[in-house]
Image 1: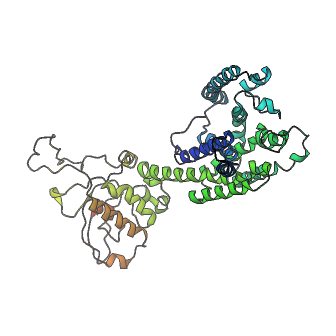
Image 2: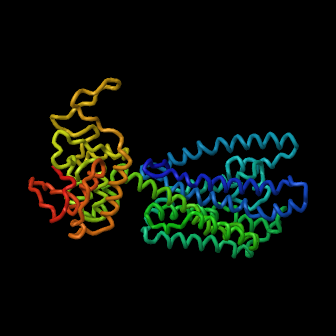
Length: 470
């Protein structure tokens, strides 16, 4: 299911993917006996004994998280399945052919039906060691992933029906199911023992390889994604989530083999994956709201019309409207701010560098970049030619001092309720973006505010006329 452009692309998970892949690689290196020193090899093997199992579990949870995160309602199951097969299955066929050629060359060809089961990704469904280890044995995870992806459209429909306030409960239920999986394994029929671990194949298959059981890891990532998207994440710091994962890994090293495969690390992994995704989503929301619609930021509507580009601005929420209108050299009503008595010597307040906010102002009646509209507007001279006599300077880049001064004033306005004491303190007239920002901070700091009927409200006694709306 394709990705929505409005959501973040989860760049914070790139490093986590690399760490998980490196852990799987390190585990397989320990199985090959590359280290000549037996002591070092033993220490290394002990350190990475659970790294491979943990890394695979990470990718299973991540698959459910990412698919739910990027899922779109207008994407049908058939198109989704075809995309996955087109992306994954050709690579599997290539590796299968390479394995067939290599095994034939050394005279170790697998059983025909085992090879066919591996080709069609069915080899993880039976607790038969020769079938699981046939051809490219690590492709058992693709067998599980194929089952996950076939179930995903139905699971997504169910996950979307869960009310947001119950998502944590459902996630906890899935965790409890994962933790409970190893306990009934002693009741399974006796099978052959693994050649590399003193565990029956049936127990290992049931806990770690069986696609229906590993589906729990995949499902756990789905409510985790919805928790973040619905704004119910607990804001767990990423370093703390990494520390929890390390504690879970150390716990897995000291648990019985079947319990350490998945159960010990499922909770840390379920917390590690959403943590950077929540940070990325929060940044996308904040940047997008400021760049596209600052009036939609939290608190903008609380100020009444001020947060939407009109009326007075008298509180912290109104300061958002000031950034929306005042910082770009506009009154909240959409008019330009002038210093009193400026006349033709008035210098247009240029817009601050808010990027896409220049385009987003159209719906609020904010004029686009280019100067004060009127019959006396002077056009900028072409590049390389001197400006005409009497022409005003074209709007240029915002001076850092003006912008910082204005933003500081908005910060002061947002943290202080308006009152007579604040209005009584004289202030120097300001210019540039600071004039536009101060103009929007309310009657306590500005000159007369012109209402919709054209009537001017008188400023409080003792207030200094810094700017006015005309």
